[in-house]
Length: 243
Image (cartoon, rainbow, N blue to C red; front, side, top):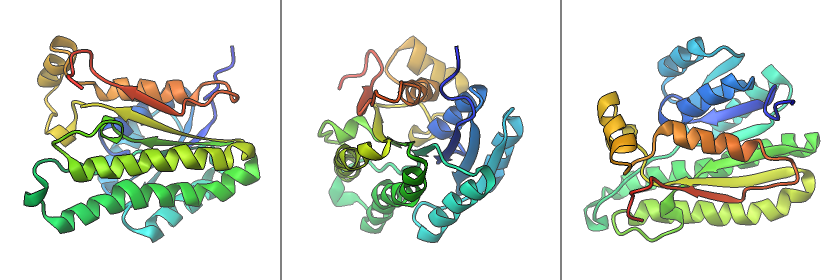
């Protein structure tokens, strides 16, 4: 059977760690050609060196519009097309809103909302000309439920869910699918979790957190559906997470 993902050209933002790096490894195993984008070029190059696939490293800050335009232009110049935009980069802030640094909230919104919209806007002309493409956005359970611990973060993810659900209908006729992947708590750097033993305890042991690989597997599932199928929103949680 032919692999639906083999040979696909994929841009991954936030690719230097966490879900983005896990997705890069999984997509590379499926034969995709990758553009790896994030602010940490050293981490991206180390990741690219371990992947058995053609990959392009682009340093890009999702709060910098010129970086996003350059990222898309370089990907198209290198590979000739763009099949998938995986808009995965994000910033997380939690706690009492009254205690927030409001400038940090603004920076989060520029990454979580403005950056995602700009990524989608930048690839749409390419995908429309091709007559096909996928835009997959990493959202959050916080975009589906009002979680008390993160009012500003939740607002950013609710905005993304609205964007995905409306843009999808605008571009479906162009052969473009628009989807959101909304994980609950993931054992990664956002929660200061990097020690393998601790991650294993919280995920497989206590089953209160997802692994980054779980989210990457879900992304591949969404992207590999037949073209007449769109997984509009996919929420995944750890079995014992109380949400």
